[in-house]
Length: 486
Ligand code: GAP
Image 1 (cartoon, rainbow, N blue to C red):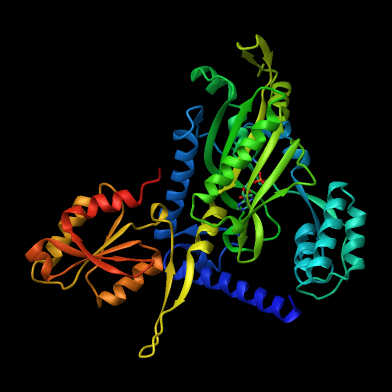
Image 2: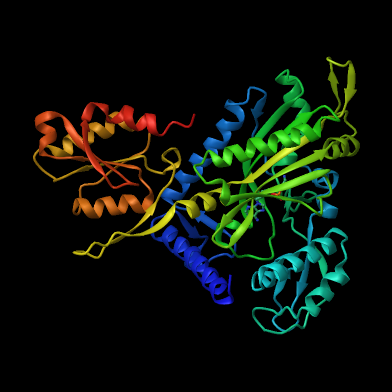
């Protein structure tokens, strides 16, 4: 690809991201947190449609894990945990990123992001070479080498434009606060940076109370907090976000097989979202986290390029062994099949819910030109898989009179215990269809005068925009069939 073509692609993708962000605000999906106070960087609120979309994705993940796997159960652990948990997990000592500050602008960068951003401006071969060099330096924790690389390639700060850099240093990403009143002895505690530790410390509670036999899994969804230094990319990188994690406990020595099993199973889950395989790739970690003996990311082709949406990690017995050591409580399992006590090994799947929302939005968002020779026309449509759409069915009486709203209301009453519906009688039918396209409603039903005569309605399909007449009595079952998760 020539330089001009590369530049045009970057601009188009950047525009797409900006358009998605604007659309999310305009249609009540995602708002900047505390916007009336000029916002809080890398913190976002979900609006009326965003919250439904997020809930549906969470539910699909939850059912895929806990309902479709008989040997996986869920828990909901507290955000606050005993401070020693984070010592045992290694987060106090190791949960940090190499950072560098520009002395002129005072702006702080994550070193890998600074180099990745620079690599994107280069031709593919040169970009790949610099990323490979960066990976090797990161794997060796060679901070002097990373600084040298930044200086040699004259990578400059986006704000000051200079290459006047500090040394590369490590910054811990955990937020801390205090528990207990000032009068009592206050203890520093952390906001959890991952949900996984709530699962590890409950491993034996669940195993014993649920009479679980290895291999088995524990799943959890919930908030996690990280003091991310680079706050960009919309809901891709947030300081407060939600994770959907599952820890799968296995017999030592079998972790490699289970790691492969979960890589494949999670990729199948992604493909079940009607996203084409060429939008995904695996990225094996070169620098392994302090707890892993194998790890990879599932990356999706976001508007800003391929980025991690999920991690699959073979975490060995690192966490349980350390919790056993720090707590002084035995965390072994007795395997009756082989008559042995051992600390299980763990394979983890960890996916960001907000990142998945962003993936689904990126995939669904389309600006469609509908112009014909006679008429200029266009629409923005969100082509969500019906099971994930915030609103499943819009019911639109053609007019506000002649008993049509009453029929529409009756249909809504019949459907709303089963799925989320939307009623609207204002504006032309065309405008109402466009508004439903913009929030991704897969089916619109129009009630007209013919409905009164023959009990049929017009159904309009979001994706094809085609319309047909179907019996009023069959609407609920038809929608229920189309939004089935399994
Ligand atoms: N328990 C393992 C763990 O937390 P991770 O790769 O650090 O692993 C897992 O995080 C997932 O959480 C990522 O793949 C990503 O989807 C999501 N995630 C991590 N940091 C995030 C952030 N700052 N904002 C949004 N999502 C984030």
